[in-house]
Image (tube, rainbow, N blue to C red):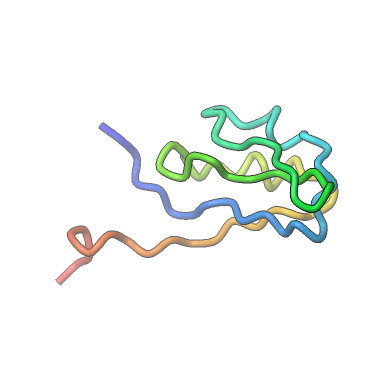
Length: 79
């Protein structure tokens, strides 16, 4: 049985320094470091695997990760 996710991490690439703290603390290992215009940054590479635990946002020393609520799937919305 899977837990319904309430929020996903969204990385502000302007604030992210690519330090990797969020990648290291992520229990389901759904974050990775990417490169854009010669700059490292964190990215969510497996959204369905994310549990929404927010450890990445808590651990980020640069306040570069925000947890953003995701809408419920159409088949799970109350009538």
